[in-house]
Each structure stands twice: as structure tokens, then as C-alpha cells.
Amino acid sequence: MKLSHVDIVIANSTHCHFASAIAVQIEESAKQRKTGIAKRSVNYLQEKMRSKHAVIAIDRLLNQIVGFCYIESWQDKAYVSNSGLIVFPEYRNLGLSKALKSKAFILAREYYPNAKIFGLTTNPQVMRINYELGYEPAAFTGLTTDKTFWQGCMSCVNFAILQAKEYQNCLCTGMLYDPQRKQKQKEQKEQIEQQEQGVLQKNQGNKNNKREQPMKVIVAFSGGLDTSFCVKYLQQEHDLEVHTVTVNTGGFTQIELAQIERRAYQLGAKTHQSIDVTKDFYQECVKFLIFANALKNNCYPLSVSAERAFQAMTIAKVANTMGITKIAHGCTGAGNDQVRFDLMFHILSPEAQIITPIRDLKLSRAATQEYLIKHGASCSESSKNYSINKGLWGTSVGGVETLSSHLYLKDEAWPTKIDKAKDREETLKITFINGEPIALNDELSNSIQVIQKLNDLASQYGIGRDIHVGDTIINIKGRVGFEAPAPLILIKAHHLLEKHVLTKAQLKIKTSLSDTYAEMVHEGQFLDPAARDIEALLLSTQAKVTGDVFVKLYPLHFVLLGIQSEHDLMQAQHAKYGEENASFTGDDVKGFTKVMSTQLAAYYQLQNKDKSVKTTPLSSIKAAVTG
Image (cartoon, rainbow, N blue to C red; front, side, top):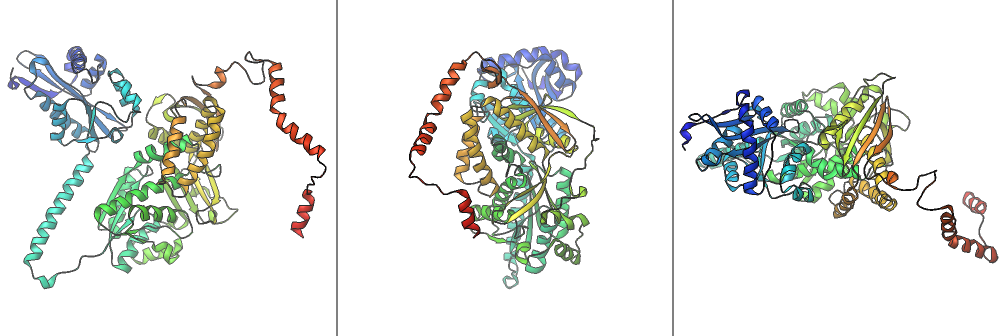
């Protein structure tokens, strides 16, 4: 056989008659390797062909199929997989696998230029081909979190291993092509070459004309009023070369990130980076907040306090990578964020100087805005009145009202406007698997997407708005508004499901440790190893937290209707609360209560006999205190 007789083309509807032969060959190849994806339906393969998401190799002399590969997008087109690669036996060892993979890779880059392309394989030849295309080995945690993709592994003989490893590992090797990483590597290479060229030119010039390199600073940049001030102030007053970094924890759209980048350069930043840590934020923190049913003071779902750790960790990593020893943030001297950022920088960048202009100068928002306008930077009027921080797990709102003890935030302060009629109501079904939300109204998705969809839906009802009153880390009282519809609904729904499926002791132990975990996250102690210990217990408790929770949405509030779960202890027990039961009798209860009262009965009998024991009346104590 010769490749000169083989045409490799993008498949279309005219190739659908080859689908049966392809499906058989995929299954046979898996059996021969004793691993891999064993089955793909004929209809599924034909859909790939019709949508032109597959490449096909055809021997034009014999008009027969000789090879195939297809692409699939995941997680809102953020990831693309190259899958189903097969070469028919008589055409192997001709280089056809590489040609098919290369064609599919080009197709994926054309359709999804910004997506990360990944694959799973046990085949060393495929690994080598992927490596030549620019893939790099990647942990499963670096691949898509879309559960629909991982369900595709169910037909693999090794699926039990994947499940046992909690989808974190298996016999396959994960490989990932990250276009952003490749672009960054290219830019770094070009930068190094430019620097080397600059060094050569500098050495050739007059050594007496050497100029000192400017001092550099990294600014944790959100594009808001305070961080904008930091950029301009550090340039104007301290002659520092500013490099800005925006860390996205799920609160920014691509349009907003582009606007933030544009503002950074308008303010004079030398470089700007936008780093998305939403996936890490969910996997390493948010899901444990759900497991813990974490609400600070039974109110606040730790929306901003949780994300600050991941923003600070990312900033510190960038500073260390760039070799910059000055880090600036825009926190004031009255809140919790200053502690969270400072703590993380002290731990992860101990040599760095932490610069905090807003805190050190004790500036009001009006004064900050005035400075920016004076130096030619535009400011919106709303930024003068309200500070808004948005992330995956909710939005915080601070303003003049939250500085008081009695004022409520105005309607225009809330980031989402109520868009549902007063008489509107809506019933939702939230599906949890092992404690994680994976579907909304039976639409299978990943947990991040469930949170985002639930936020969009429930915020239109004005659900999730409140003001949290608490003791700050620096021991002063504070108020902050927040809008967190999805967190509040998910935490309450998850807790209801737990009350049905966990034992009494499990719930009691969880409550104690959950409060501790929430406090550690809130107070910036996320890196304490004790937090990992608590997370291990929380994860263990979620093995049976699987089922559906039904929620009804109304304007400004929601109601939990009930649950359905195969692990529901209420339905599994023989006894029914308030009804007759078959597991014990009334006489059993009489004996139980008699045994249970034994110790307290003895205590009070002894108290009645011992007249020498005198107790101080409560009224006497009150009189002594009031004088």
C-alpha cells in the first residue's frame, strides 16, 4: 500500500456510508490494545461527518475507508479533543496516523483558535505525534471538567480505574496543546532574543552611556478605581515601571477582560497579563465550600474572601517568575482584603516589598478619583460611589450605605437588575453527584457552568442579595453588600440533601469543622495544612450526597421543595416520623427513655438530699454587677 493513493480530507455528509466500518474498526482496535475507548455509535460518527468535525482517509483507487479521526468541543468551546483515531490494519506503518492527526489538529485550530486541544492515549506512537504537534503531557486536572466528556470513557475496559481515581488519573496519558501558553513561549523567546540583541548592541556602544534599569512593580489590577490609582501613582510619584496582572476567578467576560487590558495600557502599564484561575478556584476551594455548606455568620457565602487567596497566589507566582520584588495592591486599611493579600505575599514571595498606596495615604474614593482625573485618566461616576468585586462565587458591593449601620444599598448599586414580574415563579431541579452540582433541569454540564447558569437565572428575581455584618480580621465591625444567588441556593439545596442522606454523627462533625474551614478561608489562612485535613474529611462525607433537589424561585426569595435520592435515609427506614412504625414498639421507647434519664435523675435526687450546697440566685449576681 502507498500513501500516494490515499486522500485525507475533511469529512462531510457524502462519507456517512463509511460510518459502520469505522465504528467496527474503532471497537476492534480497542480490543487489540486491550484498552482505549471501545465503542462509538454509527449515528455519533455520522453526526461528526455532517458537521465537518472529522477527517477521513480514503484509498481513491479502491474507494474504501482506510483511516479516520474526529474533533469535539467541550466546556463552552474552551477545550477541543482529537478522538477516535484509527488506521485500518493493511494501511498501518505508512505514516497515516501522523497525517490524520495533523489534519485534525489544523481543523481544530481553524474552528476553535483559542481553545486548548487535548487527548488521552496509551499509544506511544500517538504520544510522539502529539508531541511533534506541540502537545505537552498534562495531568487530568488540566483537561476539561465537562462530565459529558468523561462519560465517554464508560465503554473503556479501564473505566473502573478512572472512577476509583476520582477522574484524576488512569492508564491513559493526558496531552494538552495550549495556544495561549504557546504564544507566551513564543513571545518569551522573542523577548529573550531581543534582550540578547540589546546586550550585544549595548556592549558595542559607549559604556559611559549605560543607564540603570528602571525599578519594576507588579500591580494586582482589576481595572477599578483603586487599582487604576495604583498604576498611575506608582509611575508618577515613584518612577516605577508598572506591570499589571488581572486574575480572573470567574467574574469577568472576555469583553470585560479586553477592556481591563486596554485600560491598563492607557494608564501606562509596561505589560499586562490576564490569567484565568476559575477552574482551579472551583476545584480547590468552591466545591469544598459547597461540601461545607459554608456561610459566614449564617449569611455570607465567602464570595470575595474565598477568591482573594487564588488571586494573591497567582500574583505571587507571576512576581517570582518575572523576578520582580515589588508587589502592589489597592486595598484600604480598614478591610479584610489587605490581610489576605499581605499574608499570601509574605508566604509565597517573602523577599518582596508590599506597596499599598491607598492604605498608606488613607485616601477616600473621591480623592482617588480626583487624582486620576488630574493626571488625565477617565473615571466613571459610579466608581466614585461603589466598589464592586465580581467572581464565580458571588459579587460584593461596598458603598456609603455599607459604612453605616442602618442604610440599605440603593437599587442602582446592585450589579444585576430585577427582570421578573412580581407574580412570576419558577421551579428548578438541581442534580448533585458526590456533593457537586452537575446538572440544572436535567441539562448535564460541569459544576462551573451550573453555577454560572443558576446565577444568571436567579439574579433576575433579585435572589441572593443581602448585607453581611461581621467582625473583620483586624477586629472591627464591618458591613458589605453581596449578590450571590447561585451560592445561596446551592448551599441550601446541598445542605437539604445532606440532611436526608448523612447520619446524625456525620452532620454534627461536619457542622463543627465546616465553621472552622469557613473561618480559615475567610481570614486568609487557605494555605494552612489544617485546611487540607478538613477538606479530606469533607470529601469523604460526600460519597452518598447524590440526588436531585427541587427549588422554587420567587421574586426576592426561594423555597426548597424537597429531594429525591436513592440514598435517602428517611425513605429507607422502617419508622416514619409521627406515624406507626415496624422497627420498634412503644414499650421499647419506654425502656429507652428510662435508661436515658438515669444519670440526670440521680443528679437531681442527690441535689434534693444535700441541703448544704447553696447556690447563688441569679438576681443577686445581677445586682452585684449593676452596683
